Amino acid sequence: MSFTRVTSFGSNDSGYESGESADIIEAHSRAKQQEHAREVSRQRQSILAKELSRQDSDEYGQDMLEHMLRMDAESLPDVDSIDIQTEIQWFMRPYLLDFLVEAHSAFQLLPETLFLTINLLDRYCSKRVVYKRHYQLVGCAALLIAAKYGDKKEKVPTIKELKSMCCSLYDDDMFLQMEWHVLSTLGWSIGHPTADAFLKMAMKDSVPDPEVESLTLYILEIALYHREFVSRHSSSLALSALALARDIYRRPQIRQVDWAHQYDRTIFADLSAKLGEPSNILSRKYSSARHFNVSSVVSSYVMHKAMMARAPPTPVYDLTPPAFSKGNSTGYFNAFSTPQKNQVTAVSAHGLYTPPITPDEGVPKHAFMPPTPTPTGPQQFEFTGLPQYHNGSQWNFGAY
Image 1 (tube, rainbow, N blue to C red):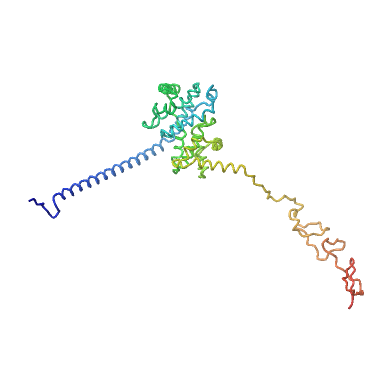
Image 2: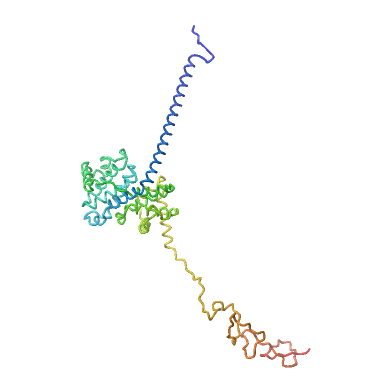
């Protein structure tokens, strides 16, 4: 017969079980503490990195801005050279950009990758003759180079993926050859300060406003579709688009005291005129909640401006009283002036003379004051039962 040894803590088996549970709980608690410590360490590192970045920005910010502005001027495409292309025309540009915008969204690349892609495409078309059948291939090569230059390695599209998006129109070797040809044509000079880089620099010292930032990017991507903005400086485009986005959201415009708020009013007006012509692909991209549905905001803004333009002009009333001369001091208030005697023409230094109570002889009676009747003597009044009428100034007074 076997007996189970029982103590005040229970049986031996239950003791082993309770000990294992305690070890599991202790290990779980220790893991949570370690995870919390790692999270605190990451937050401290992030705060320290931001502080060091802020200090470096304060110290070298002006030098960085000058370098970016110089690079922006040196890496602009030449729109006049693109005009003389024999096969590709400007009406083909929206179709290629729609394809690149969809590919950029499908691969979830950074915003600066799209702007750099278009810059590389336009710079190449400024230097080389491009055949119509190779236009899409050049765009894919530019997207591949831009993704390798500034995006994460795992986000870079593969040749197979690009070939699939082009419906196998080009072979694998053609993508590699075009990539090398673009790089050699540009002298391996890929870096270009994009419009979104200037946007970040302009908003770094202001209160974060993700709605305005998203709307600004939408306006900048609309500008990519139009010829008149191809040779514009990225800095001017970014500042003008930011000012337009603030105007649409009715945010207060900051006074133009430094570079970040000195926008070009001509570009501002040109961008505003193009808001009514967005691409369907681009409008659908920015209609999501992630982008705060800014495409609908822009549509409402454009409709409101169109209604205001069709409305009849507000009539203008001249509320300025007419001028009157010194000789006629009561010219404007004739309706309220006191009638004066005709023969009184002299005016004293303090105004007009007060007319006497009794009119002088020879002064004509006023037109609206009838003369007082004067009795001519006792006359007989005969009552006939009919009303009596006077003739002129003759009155009949009868005795009863």
